[in-house]
Image 1: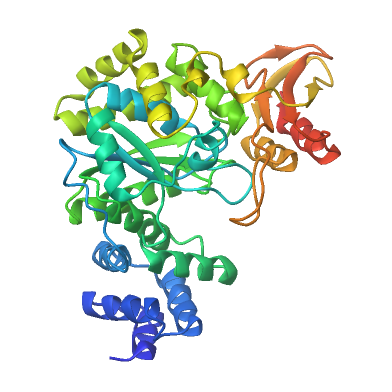
Image 2 (image 1 turned 180 degrees about the vertical axis):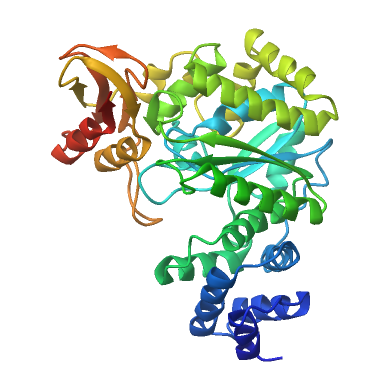
Amino acid sequence: MRAVDIIIKKRDGGVLTDEEIRYFIDAYTAGEIGDDQAAALMMSIFFRGMDYDETTALTLAMAESGKQVDLSGIKGVKVDKHSTGGIGDKTTMIVGPITAACGVPVAKMSGRALGFTGGTIDKLESIPGLSTSIPIEKMVEIVNDTGICVAGQTLELAPADKKLYALRDVTGSIESIPLIAASIMSKKIAAGADAIVLDVKYGSGAFMKTKADAKALADTMCGIGEKAGRRTVAVLNSMEEPLGMCIGNTIEVKESVETLKGGGSEDLKKHCFELAAHMISLGLGIGFEEAEAMALKSVEDGSALRKFAQMIKVQGGDPSVCDDPDAALGIPKYSYVIRAEKDGSIEKCDAYSIGMAAYALGVGRTSLKGKIDPRAGVKLIVKSGVDVKKGDGLCVLYSDSPVSEEAIERASSAYIYR
């Protein structure tokens, strides 16, 4: 079998066999096929696409290119959640504790983020003392004791995906639904969960810009999950505006605590309860409505907040963040209020522009070793559908460094008037 024959077959619109895909991925991971030929195959897939069987074969080959996480030592049905990302997406810190408080074990591996906002691991590690560097054996022990653990992804997880993603990033072949689906699902399958809930975002602040593309991606990932023997459910969610009212690292931890106490914005609560209900339904084998009622009750009776505090403590963090977030996480040194330029009604608070403002404040990073400002962020005062008068506050920019002009300009441009 030759790599060039596989490339030509896909270039010409052929359907690759499981054996051809497995050979290519194994050889590329081992360094026997170079970046040049891998880039050629990725571009061929970009233009020619893949059917469900091909995409599933690619996903499984990537998942099995490294170590497989064994969660069989954890009692019960393990349900994972994956979000395709977005501005203000702090759902894991809310949905995880709710799900665990309802009796479904949550053993989640999350990542850091490149670009304009932090990932779940960045947000959790902004809590003093909290560690996400947890070996799998320890994670199993923690989940059996407490019901929840969120750890950083290990370097051995789906190494083929890491190599291919870096290659796609520099060759302009990122926006391919089969390649995106295989990248996401290979890590989810390798992470060992029994069932998966997918939170697929679309809009200006998301990777998929249209609802139709998001649905196509969701359908593809669900198809892969089911073929791989994982019960998989997808939820679509608009990211034209930020999710919730806070964008940053410590500021999103604070908003998560507020939500677990029963407060928070309606859009964030609605979305988190929907995700949690799907996870609970899959984990306990019950109907969605019953699961949703359990999720609501866990917030009302305080058990979800207590579960979050327990998780933080077991992972070495300061659980007092659940009592007094400002005291535990600190207050940024600098702030700047963006004010309405005129009387009118806010038609939209653009998620992408707010994300870029957060990036300019120091929330995100351009490399995995890049530094972030954990206390930097944007707190929205208003979003769409609100009437304002000239001078009213629209949002507040926070940072431990002087607020940049770029951040001010980006945040100001986010607000679109009717």
